[in-house]
Image (spheres, rainbow, N blue to C red):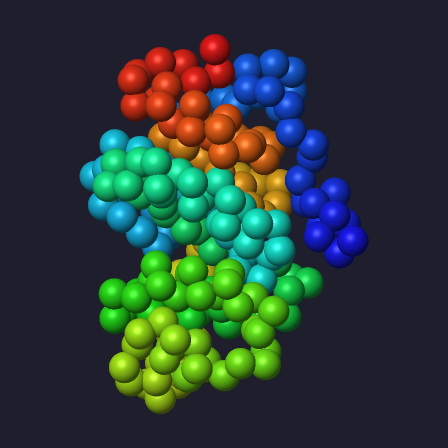
Length: 206
């Protein structure tokens, strides 16, 4: 029930691409949206997926274990995901989780930490940050825990949050694929079809 409420609050019901007010549209300024992002994959990959994300958001967890996982499996090295922090105010541990991803990125473990945060989302506030670090394969758990409790990456997290607000991002997760803004939640099949069209240089809304 809680997940359903979050969906209604932050995300409108999906509609097919290319029809009605929910149709995907192209934004030529999308590179600015990708600026304060954690990049998982190559920054020169032909597919660049920007995700405005809150690591405590249950809908983000669903998307991560659904469409994001399927896109990564389908496109592999052709896909990079750029995570822009958008920690929602009602989520108590969202900023700490964003800081954890930034701290993990220092050791090359950002992808592992993101996977772990979504996998163990119900342990936020219960499991120590040292334990999260250990399970993500980070050796110096004490340094990591200290990093998470610091404000080292506050300006970067704030910049992602402010950018999300300025661009009127409706909630989390929100996606932009190579400049194509996706206003609704797509199924894996719809997202893959859209990505294949982008790769082929076609309009993905047709």
